Amino acid sequence: MDAALWAIGRGTGVVGLVALTLAVLLGILTRSGRPLPGLPRFSITLVHRNLSLVACVFVLIHIVSLFFDSFAQLTLLDFVVPFFGSFLPFWQGLGTVAVDLLIAVTVTALLRNRIGLRAFRLVHWLTYAMWPIALAHAIGNGTDGTSPWFLWLAGISTLAVVAALAWRVSARFVEFQSVRTGETS
Image 1 (cartoon, rainbow, N blue to C red):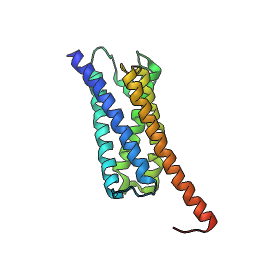
Image 2 (cartoon, rainbow, N blue to C red):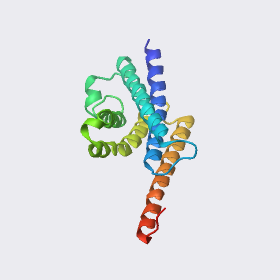
Image 3 (tube, rainbow, N blue to C red):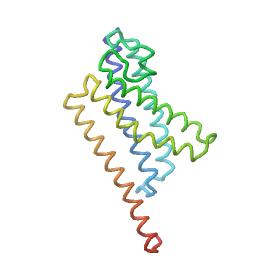
Image 4 (cartoon, one colour):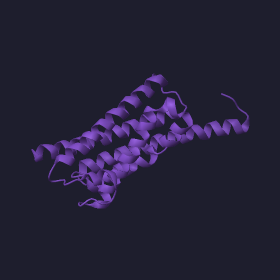
């Protein structure tokens, strides 16, 4: 049973990270203010939201499966207090911090209409901290974290997120320049 729990924990961790990466990319693309060819903005927003929830489910399965795995030896304290784990406490603690941030972002997203757009956006900015922390946790604590295939996946994910951020920032720069020069689009 432990071997199955370990495999589920590993697999759901990787799938959760990939889903989070795609959700971050879609979130950046949605907020860029630029239209995407052939895709209405509302559809990207819906896919972003649904993919984010799917990522949360995979992260939850990742955590629960490793909690019940006797090899991982996780305690309830490990899920709440970062950096106190028995195995690689720093890297495990990063996972705890990432999950705490993910919970904050998810709860505020689900309560967006009740808490207001300003609070939602403010907390949603935590995603820019959560994603690299989760990636660092996966590399430092994951069984496959330093294997070539995972490092390729991490590298491609990082390049994609950095490219999306550059695309978003360039849209703001072009907008700022056109306002500054008095041009309108």
